Length: 222
Ligand code: CA
Image (cartoon, rainbow, N blue to C red; front, side, top):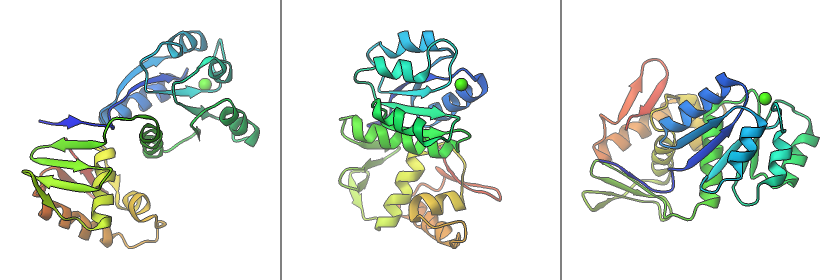
């Protein structure tokens, strides 16, 4: 039985390239979000003006209205721009129009999931916690409880647990985990990841939840 706190959001995806739209939806739903897709500027505009979305992922180049035109009409809903252009003018224009963040195609899907998390954390006011099995994780005060008893995690162990939860059901390479948790480059020692994974599994008794992905890394299954 799981309950979710800040991590669950209702997200509108405005993207005319179906493969990209589907990829974004698939991955955001894997980590627990509820997604709604539209594929052109007109549907994007009418849907973006509805209330109830926690976040809009908005492509700039769209048939009908452009992402910038839609952006000008959105009052409150947080927006992450997606643009194929790398020109700094586009980035500046999007941010000036009030976007919370932007991402440039082609993007790493894990990076998008992380940015979604960051924007939601800034903009959603729910208390941030995550529960699964007999575990409760409180992100604000960085405490973890098992059967109601606190389990003391070292700072990096908690960071790793948080990254696993936020990217649940996604396969994460050791290099990606090093980057997300330790901010090392590819050259960092990936055994660090293995050691911390083992500690998390032991301390929390969640060996079955943290699956080893053959030749790759790990996946937190929920
Ligand atoms: Ca497009």
